[in-house]
Image 1 (cartoon, rainbow, N blue to C red):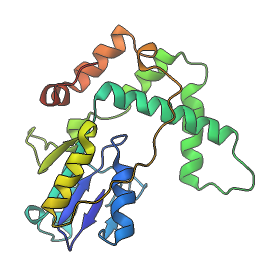
Image 2 (image 1 turned 135 degrees about the vertical axis):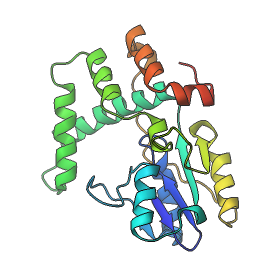
Image 3 (image 1 turned 45 degrees about the vertical axis):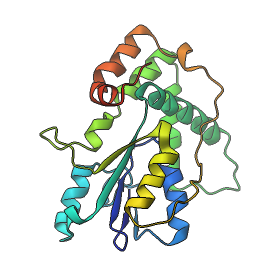
Length: 216
């Protein structure tokens, strides 16, 4: 989640959709007033939904309608698989962490979660756990009535073009997007999905699949 009062924009950061690239591009330029925090209890949680942020705006007496609200979605099968790769890599980092590097409490908790996720489980069970424990992408940008409450839903596959569109909307010259937080690709997605988990994703992410015409 990024907020700029001067340029009047808000990003709703759905996990594993390239949002770190957005942050690493805009923040060094001094364009952002508020950067989302990792704490779930924060009013400015980094992965807050649009509805949560709308309520935060109301509490702060900020005009929700005056801000351009931008989010990014991704092929859901790719997105959940990206979680798998990220958690696998994070587990290895945690288990092999150097004693000379101090980890924050949040990082340690994440490491412990990743270790437990992969402990004595088949890949199929791990994928099911990941799918079931993350909210659908549409929950980030729809309200309780199912109405769209952001101004633009960008595509991860066309991220550069959509980022230039964001720059145009907030009055900036086109910027070069920094590519950050890429997961190492040691795996083939098709080897980790079964018919059951393919259908599980399809059912959970039906809205995004329909509007973006995604396929496995």
